[in-house]
Image (cartoon, rainbow, N blue to C red):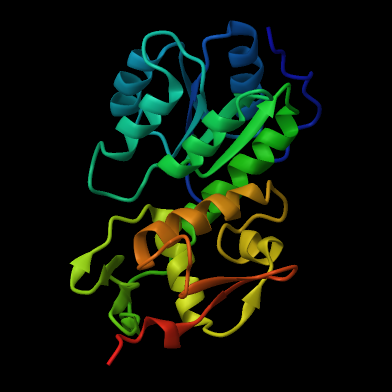
Length: 255
């Protein structure tokens, strides 16, 4: 059984606005008690669900700003819960931070591909978890108000509309997760420039720390959706030893 490490002084939640609501989905009562207690002391309003079905019901009732989601759950597992939460409504994607065991790398990668915003491995530091939650929430809440619509970005037959949060390739709308869309827009706004994974993690995710494989997974998923041949990418290219670069000229249709 995995145990969270004992709490120390929790970092405070930002004082602006009402307390953020966090739903903790965890079947281990000890871990759940530590996490909810630590979040409460940090200023969050918390609720707890012990299995996958209860998590879906509680999410409707509690309307959380973020979900802390364990992968290994009775009933339905965390991956299926994440999948259903992602398609629950047409509004902004509900932020999800996953809790995983160290041996669950394949599930962690799949969780990121489903749109999870971050993950923390067990055993974990409750202080680190609160910091990660704060980072994810700041990112989710940092979108500027829609005062002046941002111009549509174009590269050949690829377009991205930041205001409408829609992307098309050759006239067909692309099905992108929120983070895939953010990554595409960032790269299209900075054509020809190489970005290291560390910089993308900071500029797109808003994280000062994190697993760089998060970036790798999202780049691979984005290529699968925008490249004619994802195995030989021409739009989002790898600059070995340096990072990734968006090459808009490669998006021009051939004559």
